[in-house]
Amino acid sequence: MEADEKEDQLQRYAADLRDTFVAERQRAEELRSSYVATVRALTNAVEARDAYTGKHAERVAAYGLELTRRIDPELAGDPQTEFGFLLHDVGKVAIPDGVLYKATDLSDEEQSLMRRHPVIGFEIVSGIEFLTDAAQIVRHHHERFDGEGYPDGLAGDEIPLAARIFAVADALDAMTTDRPYRPGLTIDQAREEIRAGAGAQFDPTVVEQLDGLSDEVIERIRTEIG
Ligand SMILES: [Fe+2]
Figure 1 (tube, rainbow, N blue to C red):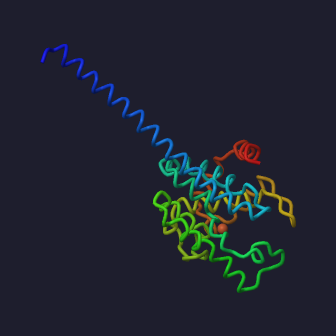
Figure 2 (figure 1 turned 120 degrees about the vertical axis):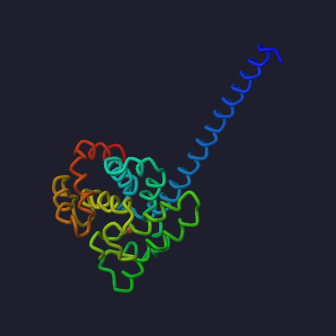
Figure 3 (figure 1 turned 45 degrees about the vertical axis):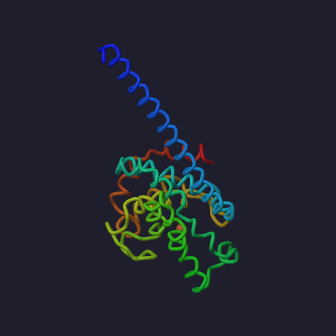
């Protein structure tokens, strides 16, 4: 084969490779968007039932990702982290309206039913291949750093890091959101409350990173998501 011919052939191979690469990237992108769409649909199915929380899951996911970026950038880059944050309460689909919407205190029986939602959510999500890590966040989002949480009573590092981060993000959103029975706290008040829970409900190293999350970033998330 002539040298010219060889070079032509090599260039054709290179062009083919480039085309394959572009096509693969497009397919990966399509796959990613269908994952995101699936997760959003599941999230909306839960939030549509709970008028109080509105876009709680989206705000928590945004706060959670900001915190995760400071603590473990690789974990923040894993799409399953965001998926787990968004889907944390997916198990509530199995909680009857009468319990989910009850304005007064729950009976012991109702409370134990309500406390099953992390495990129900885990069962829903863990069978989905692209959500196996997200399922760990769903299962452990009500664990406490001191081991007094549920469903498994894990403590400290036994709790997946993303779930420890979630707990702080969740508290921040819950405290700063108005509820029918009480107005939301200011960001400063919420910071103080969360700091008071370091080592008990929350991982102190995560709480420390909350200081790096400025009021501006928190306000921006609140305004953008609503
Ligand atoms: Fe929950």
